[in-house]
Length: 74
Image (cartoon, one colour):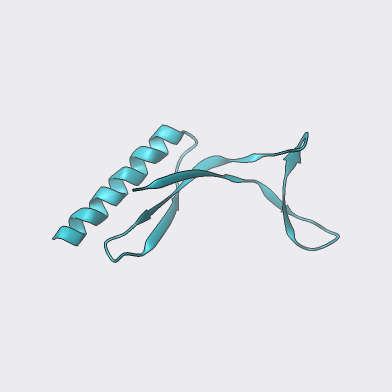
């Protein structure tokens, strides 16, 4: 089952040198594109960047997962 999720914009904090989320009025700012994860034909978890639309990203992830399943089955 493919997983679709949202990531957030980050920046380097000059004081600590660590990555921190970019905040807008106390809420993290989401990244423009959705990301996805699925398990390939070798059993490894694969991740990728989709589009700005969640439904398109879900369709892409489902298609890639189906291709990996077809390869696994031969």
